[in-house]
View 1 (cartoon, rainbow, N blue to C red):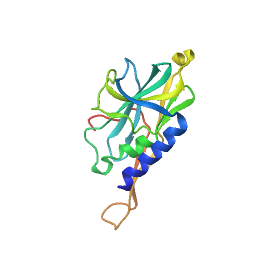
View 2: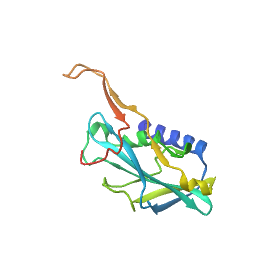
View 3: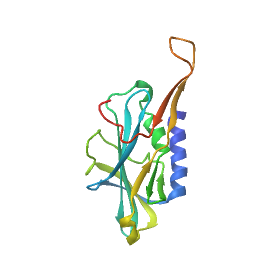
View 4: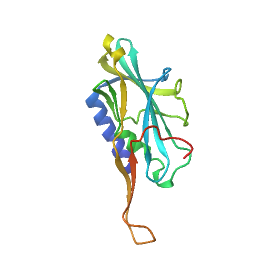
Length: 171
């Protein structure tokens, strides 16, 4: 219970600090969403696709994420914790911190047109925003730390998430 609650609460707090959502929407990602993510030291990974655009003269942040089809049982459902620490930037400005609002999709080579969840932010869209690059940042982190008796493993055993780029795939 605590594993899911803390990231959700932290995400909401951080999200409010970057841009207050006016409305939650569903839409498709555009033709060239920005894609990033990372891998787990135990195998498998996470890919995040984001699209920032104008809607009703406000900034609309849309996103979807995918996890590897096969990965260690130790990292199943850990994506919420990892997504909770992620941030989407427009240029150098953080727009949304806490990416747990995003829609889960199947891993793909191309996320254009993927079904996404969006936040309409209380941030006016400026004409120069069209020229700014969208960036996704998810920090490196310890996802899980196991400790216990020596059962042939070097204890304590840690599983890390590393921001290596799109990481969701078959493994």
